[in-house]
Amino acid sequence: MAVLYKEPKMPVDTHVFRVSERIGLTTNSKNPLQTEKELEKNIPAIDIPDAHHWLILHGRYVCTARSPKCKICGIKEYCKYFVRTKNEL
Image (cartoon, rainbow, N blue to C red; front, side, top):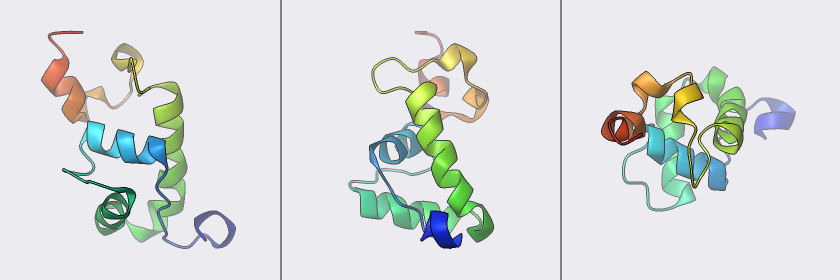
C-alpha cells in the first residue's frame, strides 16, 4: 500500500522495528504492530511511504544490529542510543 499507492501505511520489518526503538522514534514497542501504530501517529502521513524506506536503509547500512556505525551517522545528535553510549564509542 505504501509503495504502490503512496498510502500512509508503515510496514514494519526487522530493520524498522529495531532502528525505530534504538534511535527513539518509538518507546518500548513490544511488537511490529505497536511500532507501526506509534510511527504512523508521529510521522506526517505524506512522509510515511518514504520514511519506511529511510528506516530500512538506515538500519541496513548505518545503524546495523551488532555494531552501529555511529561515527558516520547523520542523525546521531538526535539518537537516543548515541546519546546514551557516546562515551563508550
